[in-house]
Length: 236
Ligand code: ADP
Ligand code: MG
Image (cartoon, rainbow, N blue to C red; front, side, top):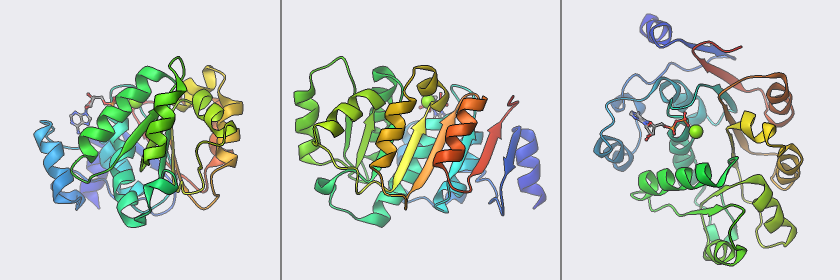
């Protein structure tokens, strides 16, 4: 309706895809579980950021999504919150392997994502493990053996651990490529493609990126199925 259109115009949100749902203009209108709403409020957040407002309802419909928005726009919770809901619906045993996999370019970013997943997923009793290079594998393998609903990983380290056959991605049904443009700039495309081969095709795939160059468009068209695209601000 017109309220949704005004909200999109005001926040420079553009969308493409079939039957794109209206943005959530407030936390209350999301219908998210009480414990998650409480976490968002106690973090001091007043309302969803534009990327959250528009990507949450799309992701909650289990659709693939490409979200293009600059750094600092709240993309992490944009994919984590629908990921929490996805996990609740799956009710898998985390010892069989993670349900949600987030690929991230660097150790620093991966640990920030893990911190947000633990903070906002605590009340839902979700577990998260982080895998990154430049640190011994032992503790990461022990964390994996304990079972995790969510794994956040850099592509290089995850690929090493896959080659050791110490993790199975057969239960992953929600895959996030965060900072896809940076992962490609860093040369991670071969590792990403090897990792994706280990994940069942019946999955939801979400790609979050700050820029939208040709290389990112190509991997999006290879890995995503009929995605809805959400842009915040100008996208070249
Ligand atoms: P991006 O991945 O787009 O660079 P982040 O997900 O790292 O952005 O979020 C940037 C900052 O905004 C973080 O400190 C995060 O906790 C905060 N943030 C996330 N969602 C909201 C919100 N709805 N309202 C206010 N701040 C938020
Ligand atoms: Mg980010």
